Length: 480
Ligand code: TXE
Image (cartoon, rainbow, N blue to C red; front, top):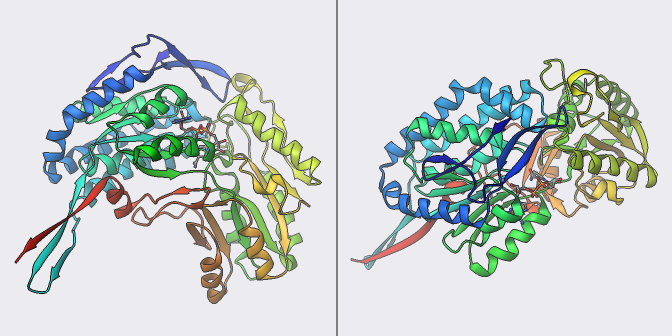
């Protein structure tokens, strides 16, 4: 049995409660590890450590902070296979996906912000010959970072890296469902020589550790990625404390396919957009709208490709789709497929629990589902399912399409498939989303603003946006 530990004040430790949380391997359904069931006292110890470390860390030259964070990135890459195996075992995703996407991106997150801080500039405003104003971007102190189970290390480091790079210390909480890669990160930070207390990782339940971080009076900023309901709960606590909030929440993303698209490229990429990471990415395209003249051809070709996706052991390179992250989540996804049928949908393929053989016979596997014939207003088309389930809907006019695409309470991401450039610009501008991809999906430049509108969140991550979130702007005005 693997015992995962907290990382507080530079050392690995058990929870002060002395109690543990079972950690499951989705592919087998078995408990393979124990994580600390930490609580408020552990968070207090982490915040105290971070406060002690902050004066020296924020005074550390950017070049040195950069060197240390690039060292962390290098060491993640040196241990890439170990991280990939851990991430796959914890989340259920295919190990090839963790190896190709999750872990390299975690290293990239550190390297990106480690180099960004070497190129920052700030503003100055001259008031005639009366005064000169200049803006200081100063670190906020101790940042709270809380992340989810779908892209564990990828999203965990997407918050931690800019916070540390900007000169803050961090108290971070990974999901209790996928704690393993955060534990490995703790080991890397110790080996890389990150000063004690600069980064503190506290494992535990959201209602114990997450709430303690959110409510702690000495944490002035919270960066959260997770469910919309949880985001609202965090906001209710943090708002009256006037904390800075970055909330990266759910999505119900539309894929808009016009008849003049590049058919094969669209088919291949939309398949990935629908089912990558078992559909457990907030950016996945779960509502697919196809221009009526292309609808039958696309539907038949798409269903054929979906049927060919191998649902299998995450350790097998041939696996296209691994296990869902938990039994609870699997039941949630299956309940939405039953709802789709009740709402009048036709399940064209998939949507069943898959019983594999061998070591995975008790794993949490669901075959990827494609559903047509539903109204765009039904619950299946309005609520986030966050699993391998997509709907197909034909459209006739651009106005009808935009009304359907913009009809949900979410507004995170969309992809648009057309060879008409003017239409691409027009439709992208009309979509109520934070991110629009045209003839691509999940093509990421880390300098770009990342986030959504409506119930998909508040604020933007990425690039200078992230560094601005983790600093406070101060205007200094000097009389000339
Ligand atoms: O997220 P939670 P879960 C969506 C998806 C999923 C739903 C719930 O629809 O089914 O959210 O997933 C911590 N105060 N997304 O349960 O509960 C928790 O311990 C402070 C979309 O994983 O939001 C974990 O570390 N923290 C999302 C983190 O918050 C709390 C990705 C996320 O957990 C807390 C994942 C509280 N009261 C799920 N309660 C995306 N946008 O990518 C929990 N936590």
